Image (cartoon, rainbow, N blue to C red):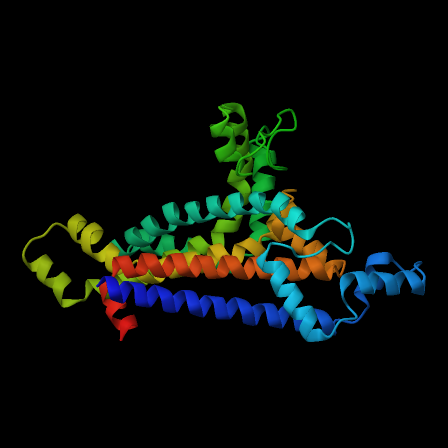
Length: 342
């Protein structure tokens, strides 16, 4: 059993390392074929050709392409993504400054997805074809089809009309000072420093952006959980438990929910990874100022070093999320370990 587990995890890690290498190669090649000289972009149109040539030398753009790629991968492994062509600051420091804001937003989003969608999927499956099921399916379809930025705007309008004192911009109240470190996540840092006023303000500021981001995932996970629950209700072992008079709540929470959790967990892992780079619309609506909006700005300004770093960091989170989900699924269903080990 332990050998199978280690073999599976080793193959996963090697596969993910290969994915990161291929992703690095792809983004490097794309950055090199984008129209425009990165050195000229960094210096602006008024720079002289001598200044541009000096910048190209400093950036290593005159080296052979293979040497450039090796240097880039080596720097990325050390956490060095070069300097921003627009601000001139190290890209790594800019990302480290902005990533915690998006990471905190996405973590709260996933938490809301879990606590809302899983119970809703269980309830709609339990009362299949009833008004409860129809209502849950209606709201899940709305969540899947309506874009997150529209939810964000509707929540702001609702706050303005029904909760006039509720904050809708920024991460904390402007009268408060955020504690410094250690994680950059305001909820954790405020508790670590005993700043409960900051904690309450940060939680208020988080609720609407996280809810706007979570709506699509809530709708999708609710539908998948419902379908999985209904499918497993027809299995022979579940019918046998019912014939022996086992209470429905025991069957649902001890057996069916565990069996039906594989697909929803996979979706939630992918949602977490994708939101790291795709939360920019909600960040812009709520003036969040995070990693996702930084990536959008880098693309619009053709800041190649920043764009390459954003893509690699987003890909890294995809890999980490998939690895965590794989570990959880292997723990839930031992059959997967034997299937992977063959």
